[in-house]
Length: 310
Ligand code: NAP
Image (tube, rainbow, N blue to C red; front, side):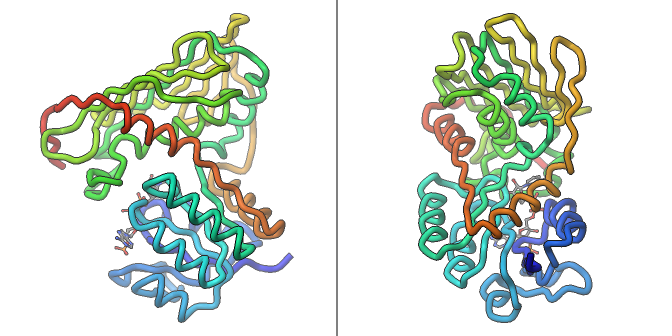
Protein backbone atom coordinates (compact mmCIF):
# COMPACT_ATOMS: atom_id res chain seq x y z
CA UNK A 1 0.00 0.00 0.00
CA UNK A 2 1.33 3.42 -0.94
CA UNK A 3 2.23 6.14 1.52
CA UNK A 4 -0.37 8.91 1.81
CA UNK A 5 1.24 12.36 1.96
CA UNK A 6 -1.07 14.58 3.95
CA UNK A 7 -1.19 18.33 4.48
CA UNK A 8 -2.98 19.85 7.48
CA UNK A 9 -4.95 23.04 6.89
CA UNK A 10 -5.64 24.87 10.17
CA UNK A 11 -2.80 24.07 12.54
CA UNK A 12 -4.66 24.84 15.77
CA UNK A 13 -5.57 22.96 18.94
CA UNK A 14 -7.03 19.78 17.47
CA UNK A 15 -4.45 19.56 14.69
CA UNK A 16 -1.63 19.71 17.22
CA UNK A 17 -3.25 17.62 19.97
CA UNK A 18 -4.61 14.79 17.81
CA UNK A 19 -3.99 14.93 14.06
CA UNK A 20 -0.21 15.24 14.12
CA UNK A 21 0.37 12.39 16.64
CA UNK A 22 -2.09 10.16 14.76
CA UNK A 23 -0.45 10.86 11.38
CA UNK A 24 3.00 10.32 12.84
CA UNK A 25 1.86 7.10 14.53
CA UNK A 26 0.34 5.60 11.38
CA UNK A 27 2.78 4.05 8.88
CA UNK A 28 0.34 4.74 6.02
CA UNK A 29 0.68 8.51 6.42
CA UNK A 30 3.40 11.11 6.33
CA UNK A 31 2.86 14.74 7.34
CA UNK A 32 4.06 16.66 4.28
CA UNK A 33 2.86 20.23 4.94
CA UNK A 34 0.88 22.47 7.20
CA UNK A 35 -0.99 25.70 6.56
CA UNK A 36 -0.81 28.48 9.11
CA UNK A 37 -1.64 32.04 8.15
CA UNK A 38 0.77 33.36 10.76
CA UNK A 39 3.58 30.93 9.90
CA UNK A 40 3.14 28.87 13.08
CA UNK A 41 3.17 25.43 11.48
CA UNK A 42 4.62 22.16 12.70
CA UNK A 43 8.39 22.42 13.31
CA UNK A 44 10.50 20.89 10.54
CA UNK A 45 7.60 20.54 8.08
CA UNK A 46 6.99 22.99 5.19
CA UNK A 47 4.48 25.61 6.29
CA UNK A 48 2.37 27.62 3.85
CA UNK A 49 0.37 30.80 4.46
CA UNK A 50 -2.72 29.52 2.62
CA UNK A 51 -4.17 26.27 1.33
CA UNK A 52 -3.75 27.54 -2.24
CA UNK A 53 -0.03 28.14 -1.66
CA UNK A 54 0.21 24.64 -0.17
CA UNK A 55 -1.56 23.08 -3.16
CA UNK A 56 0.91 24.80 -5.48
CA UNK A 57 4.03 24.16 -3.42
CA UNK A 58 3.71 20.74 -1.78
CA UNK A 59 3.52 17.18 -3.13
CA UNK A 60 0.35 15.84 -1.48
CA UNK A 61 -2.14 13.02 -1.81
CA UNK A 62 -4.59 14.19 0.86
CA UNK A 63 -5.52 17.04 3.16
CA UNK A 64 -6.92 17.15 6.69
CA UNK A 65 -8.98 20.30 7.13
CA UNK A 66 -8.91 21.37 10.78
CA UNK A 67 -9.95 25.02 10.48
CA UNK A 68 -13.12 26.41 12.05
CA UNK A 69 -16.09 25.04 10.08
CA UNK A 70 -17.12 28.31 8.40
CA UNK A 71 -14.19 28.20 5.95
CA UNK A 72 -14.12 24.45 5.35
CA UNK A 73 -16.20 24.37 2.18
CA UNK A 74 -14.04 26.68 0.06
CA UNK A 75 -10.84 25.01 1.24
CA UNK A 76 -12.18 21.49 0.69
CA UNK A 77 -13.51 22.38 -2.75
CA UNK A 78 -10.15 23.79 -3.86
CA UNK A 79 -8.35 20.70 -2.51
CA UNK A 80 -10.72 18.28 -4.29
CA UNK A 81 -10.40 20.28 -7.51
CA UNK A 82 -6.62 19.94 -7.12
CA UNK A 83 -7.04 16.14 -6.93
CA UNK A 84 -6.53 15.64 -3.19
CA UNK A 85 -8.50 13.30 -0.93
CA UNK A 86 -10.08 15.29 1.91
CA UNK A 87 -10.64 14.54 5.58
CA UNK A 88 -12.94 17.05 7.27
CA UNK A 89 -12.85 17.72 11.01
CA UNK A 90 -16.24 17.87 12.65
CA UNK A 91 -18.59 19.54 11.91
CA UNK A 92 -17.99 19.00 8.19
CA UNK A 93 -19.50 22.36 7.19
CA UNK A 94 -21.91 25.06 8.21
CA UNK A 95 -24.76 23.81 6.04
CA UNK A 96 -26.00 20.48 4.76
CA UNK A 97 -25.91 21.74 1.18
CA UNK A 98 -22.22 22.57 1.12
CA UNK A 99 -21.28 19.11 2.35
CA UNK A 100 -23.58 17.51 -0.22
CA UNK A 101 -21.88 19.60 -2.91
CA UNK A 102 -18.46 18.41 -1.73
CA UNK A 103 -19.66 14.81 -1.72
CA UNK A 104 -20.79 15.14 -5.32
CA UNK A 105 -17.51 16.73 -6.35
CA UNK A 106 -15.49 13.97 -4.66
CA UNK A 107 -17.58 11.34 -6.41
CA UNK A 108 -17.14 12.99 -9.81
CA UNK A 109 -13.40 13.27 -9.30
CA UNK A 110 -13.09 9.73 -7.87
CA UNK A 111 -11.57 11.08 -4.66
CA UNK A 112 -12.25 10.20 -1.05
CA UNK A 113 -14.21 12.58 1.16
CA UNK A 114 -14.40 11.69 4.85
CA UNK A 115 -16.68 13.57 7.25
CA UNK A 116 -15.14 12.58 10.56
CA UNK A 117 -17.03 12.48 13.84
CA UNK A 118 -14.31 11.69 16.34
CA UNK A 119 -16.62 10.62 19.17
CA UNK A 120 -17.99 7.81 16.99
CA UNK A 121 -14.48 6.32 16.91
CA UNK A 122 -14.51 5.32 20.56
CA UNK A 123 -14.66 1.51 20.61
CA UNK A 124 -17.51 1.69 23.14
CA UNK A 125 -19.77 3.46 20.62
CA UNK A 126 -20.13 0.62 18.06
CA UNK A 127 -20.37 -1.74 21.06
CA UNK A 128 -23.34 0.27 22.35
CA UNK A 129 -24.86 0.31 18.86
CA UNK A 130 -24.62 -3.49 18.77
CA UNK A 131 -26.39 -3.72 22.15
CA UNK A 132 -29.21 -1.48 20.92
CA UNK A 133 -29.61 -2.97 17.45
CA UNK A 134 -33.19 -4.15 16.81
CA UNK A 135 -34.35 -2.97 20.24
CA UNK A 136 -36.92 -0.41 21.24
CA UNK A 137 -35.82 2.50 23.39
CA UNK A 138 -38.02 3.46 26.33
CA UNK A 139 -36.12 6.64 27.17
CA UNK A 140 -32.79 8.29 26.49
CA UNK A 141 -31.01 11.16 28.17
CA UNK A 142 -27.99 13.00 26.79
CA UNK A 143 -26.07 15.26 29.19
CA UNK A 144 -23.18 17.24 27.72
CA UNK A 145 -21.81 19.84 30.12
CA UNK A 146 -18.37 21.42 30.11
CA UNK A 147 -16.57 24.68 30.80
CA UNK A 148 -16.19 26.69 27.58
CA UNK A 149 -13.25 28.60 29.08
CA UNK A 150 -11.37 25.34 29.62
CA UNK A 151 -12.09 23.74 26.24
CA UNK A 152 -12.09 26.80 23.96
CA UNK A 153 -9.73 29.26 25.62
CA UNK A 154 -9.76 32.56 23.73
CA UNK A 155 -11.54 31.13 20.65
CA UNK A 156 -13.90 33.75 19.19
CA UNK A 157 -15.10 31.84 16.10
CA UNK A 158 -17.28 29.55 18.27
CA UNK A 159 -19.49 32.55 19.06
CA UNK A 160 -19.97 33.73 15.47
CA UNK A 161 -22.81 32.65 13.15
CA UNK A 162 -21.62 29.28 11.83
CA UNK A 163 -19.48 28.78 14.92
CA UNK A 164 -22.10 26.46 16.47
CA UNK A 165 -21.76 27.73 20.06
CA UNK A 166 -22.49 24.92 22.52
CA UNK A 167 -23.34 22.67 19.57
CA UNK A 168 -19.60 22.51 18.87
CA UNK A 169 -19.34 19.92 21.68
CA UNK A 170 -23.05 19.03 21.57
CA UNK A 171 -22.73 17.75 18.01
CA UNK A 172 -20.32 15.13 19.36
CA UNK A 173 -23.13 13.80 21.54
CA UNK A 174 -25.48 13.89 18.54
CA UNK A 175 -22.90 11.99 16.47
CA UNK A 176 -22.91 9.23 19.09
CA UNK A 177 -26.70 9.26 19.35
CA UNK A 178 -27.16 8.90 15.59
CA UNK A 179 -24.69 6.00 15.62
CA UNK A 180 -26.34 4.03 18.45
CA UNK A 181 -30.07 4.64 17.94
CA UNK A 182 -31.20 1.99 15.45
CA UNK A 183 -33.44 4.34 13.40
CA UNK A 184 -33.59 7.96 12.27
CA UNK A 185 -33.48 10.61 15.01
CA UNK A 186 -35.15 13.97 14.57
CA UNK A 187 -35.68 17.08 16.69
CA UNK A 188 -39.15 17.87 18.01
CA UNK A 189 -38.46 20.87 20.19
CA UNK A 190 -35.47 22.99 21.12
CA UNK A 191 -34.68 25.77 23.55
CA UNK A 192 -31.52 27.77 22.87
CA UNK A 193 -29.87 30.06 25.43
CA UNK A 194 -27.96 32.95 23.85
CA UNK A 195 -25.69 35.28 25.86
CA UNK A 196 -26.89 38.84 25.29
CA UNK A 197 -23.59 39.76 23.57
CA UNK A 198 -23.13 36.63 21.40
CA UNK A 199 -24.46 35.17 18.13
CA UNK A 200 -24.33 31.51 19.21
CA UNK A 201 -25.94 29.64 22.11
CA UNK A 202 -24.14 28.85 25.36
CA UNK A 203 -26.67 26.17 26.33
CA UNK A 204 -29.45 24.16 24.68
CA UNK A 205 -32.19 21.73 25.59
CA UNK A 206 -33.57 19.42 22.91
CA UNK A 207 -36.43 16.98 22.74
CA UNK A 208 -35.88 14.40 20.02
CA UNK A 209 -37.86 11.48 18.65
CA UNK A 210 -37.23 8.33 16.66
CA UNK A 211 -39.24 5.38 15.35
CA UNK A 212 -36.89 3.32 17.52
CA UNK A 213 -38.10 5.04 20.69
CA UNK A 214 -41.48 4.96 22.33
CA UNK A 215 -40.47 7.43 25.03
CA UNK A 216 -38.67 10.70 25.51
CA UNK A 217 -35.24 11.42 24.09
CA UNK A 218 -33.82 14.47 25.80
CA UNK A 219 -30.55 16.30 25.42
CA UNK A 220 -29.02 19.03 27.52
CA UNK A 221 -25.87 20.87 26.41
CA UNK A 222 -24.31 23.47 28.71
CA UNK A 223 -21.04 25.38 28.43
CA UNK A 224 -21.44 27.11 31.81
CA UNK A 225 -20.35 24.06 33.77
CA UNK A 226 -17.32 24.58 35.97
CA UNK A 227 -15.36 21.69 37.43
CA UNK A 228 -15.26 18.32 35.68
CA UNK A 229 -17.03 17.51 32.43
CA UNK A 230 -20.28 15.50 32.17
CA UNK A 231 -20.47 13.79 28.79
CA UNK A 232 -23.01 11.00 29.30
CA UNK A 233 -25.71 9.18 27.35
CA UNK A 234 -28.13 6.97 29.27
CA UNK A 235 -30.59 4.68 27.53
CA UNK A 236 -33.34 2.55 28.98
CA UNK A 237 -34.67 -0.10 26.61
CA UNK A 238 -38.30 -1.19 26.47
CA UNK A 239 -37.23 -4.59 27.83
CA UNK A 240 -35.84 -2.91 30.92
CA UNK A 241 -32.11 -2.75 30.32
CA UNK A 242 -30.01 0.30 31.25
CA UNK A 243 -27.16 1.10 28.86
CA UNK A 244 -24.81 3.99 29.60
CA UNK A 245 -22.05 5.61 27.59
CA UNK A 246 -19.96 7.87 29.80
CA UNK A 247 -16.92 10.11 29.39
CA UNK A 248 -17.68 11.23 25.84
CA UNK A 249 -18.50 7.77 24.55
CA UNK A 250 -15.39 6.09 25.89
CA UNK A 251 -16.93 4.01 28.73
CA UNK A 252 -19.84 1.59 28.26
CA UNK A 253 -21.88 -0.06 30.99
CA UNK A 254 -24.90 -2.34 30.99
CA UNK A 255 -27.09 -2.49 34.08
CA UNK A 256 -24.31 -0.69 35.96
CA UNK A 257 -21.64 -3.26 35.03
CA UNK A 258 -18.76 -2.14 32.79
CA UNK A 259 -18.65 -3.60 29.27
CA UNK A 260 -15.14 -3.96 27.84
CA UNK A 261 -14.53 -2.41 24.42
CA UNK A 262 -11.05 -1.74 23.11
CA UNK A 263 -9.75 -0.02 20.01
CA UNK A 264 -6.91 2.19 18.82
CA UNK A 265 -8.50 5.43 20.11
CA UNK A 266 -10.50 8.13 18.36
CA UNK A 267 -7.98 9.76 16.02
CA UNK A 268 -5.83 6.69 15.21
CA UNK A 269 -9.13 5.00 14.29
CA UNK A 270 -10.06 7.99 12.09
CA UNK A 271 -6.77 7.79 10.17
CA UNK A 272 -7.03 4.00 9.76
CA UNK A 273 -10.52 4.51 8.31
CA UNK A 274 -9.24 7.30 6.03
CA UNK A 275 -6.49 5.04 4.64
CA UNK A 276 -9.09 2.34 3.97
CA UNK A 277 -11.29 4.85 2.12
CA UNK A 278 -8.39 6.09 0.00
CA UNK A 279 -7.43 2.49 -0.86
CA UNK A 280 -11.03 1.67 -1.81
CA UNK A 281 -11.48 5.00 -3.67
CA UNK A 282 -14.58 5.50 -1.53
CA UNK A 283 -16.10 8.24 0.59
CA UNK A 284 -17.86 8.31 3.93
CA UNK A 285 -20.27 11.21 4.25
CA UNK A 286 -22.42 11.23 7.37
CA UNK A 287 -24.66 14.26 7.64
CA UNK A 288 -26.99 13.10 10.43
CA UNK A 289 -25.39 15.01 13.36
CA UNK A 290 -25.27 18.20 11.29
CA UNK A 291 -28.90 17.73 10.23
CA UNK A 292 -29.99 17.43 13.88
CA UNK A 293 -28.07 20.60 14.71
CA UNK A 294 -29.74 22.42 11.82
CA UNK A 295 -33.13 21.20 13.04
CA UNK A 296 -32.38 22.49 16.54
CA UNK A 297 -31.53 25.94 15.16
CA UNK A 298 -34.60 25.81 12.86
CA UNK A 299 -37.01 24.89 15.66
CA UNK A 300 -35.27 26.51 18.61
CA UNK A 301 -37.00 28.97 20.88
CA UNK A 302 -34.52 31.65 21.90
CA UNK A 303 -33.91 32.74 25.48
CA UNK A 304 -31.47 35.54 26.26
CA UNK A 305 -29.08 34.97 29.17
CA UNK A 306 -26.33 37.03 30.76
CA UNK A 307 -23.47 38.25 28.53
CA UNK A 308 -20.44 36.00 28.18
CA UNK A 309 -17.03 37.58 28.68
CA UNK A 310 -13.99 35.44 28.00
P1 NAP B 1 -8.42 26.44 16.75
O1 NAP B 1 -7.51 26.07 17.86
O2 NAP B 1 -8.98 27.82 16.68
O3 NAP B 1 -7.63 26.09 15.41
C1 NAP B 1 -8.12 26.32 14.13
C2 NAP B 1 -6.97 26.86 13.27
O4 NAP B 1 -7.47 27.15 11.99
C3 NAP B 1 -6.38 28.14 13.83
O5 NAP B 1 -5.26 27.85 14.64
C4 NAP B 1 -6.02 28.96 12.61
O6 NAP B 1 -4.64 28.78 12.34
C5 NAP B 1 -6.84 28.32 11.48
N1 NAP B 1 -7.87 29.25 11.06
C6 NAP B 1 -8.71 29.98 11.84
N2 NAP B 1 -9.53 30.73 11.10
C7 NAP B 1 -9.19 30.49 9.81
C8 NAP B 1 -9.65 31.01 8.59
N3 NAP B 1 -10.63 31.92 8.53
N4 NAP B 1 -9.07 30.54 7.44
C9 NAP B 1 -8.06 29.64 7.48
N5 NAP B 1 -7.57 29.12 8.65
C10 NAP B 1 -8.14 29.56 9.79
O7 NAP B 1 -9.67 25.45 16.69
P2 NAP B 1 -9.72 23.92 17.12
O8 NAP B 1 -10.16 23.81 18.53
O9 NAP B 1 -8.50 23.20 16.70
O10 NAP B 1 -10.99 23.47 16.25
C11 NAP B 1 -10.91 23.31 14.85
C12 NAP B 1 -11.97 22.32 14.44
O11 NAP B 1 -11.71 21.09 15.11
C13 NAP B 1 -13.38 22.76 14.84
O12 NAP B 1 -14.29 22.42 13.83
C14 NAP B 1 -13.66 21.95 16.10
O13 NAP B 1 -15.03 21.66 16.27
C15 NAP B 1 -12.87 20.68 15.81
N6 NAP B 1 -12.47 19.96 17.03
C16 NAP B 1 -11.89 20.62 18.07
C17 NAP B 1 -11.58 19.91 19.23
C18 NAP B 1 -10.94 20.57 20.42
O14 NAP B 1 -10.80 19.92 21.49
N7 NAP B 1 -10.47 21.79 20.33
C19 NAP B 1 -11.87 18.55 19.32
C20 NAP B 1 -12.38 17.90 18.22
C21 NAP B 1 -12.69 18.62 17.08
P3 NAP B 1 -3.72 29.97 11.76
O15 NAP B 1 -4.20 31.24 12.40
O16 NAP B 1 -2.33 29.56 12.16
O17 NAP B 1 -3.94 29.95 10.28
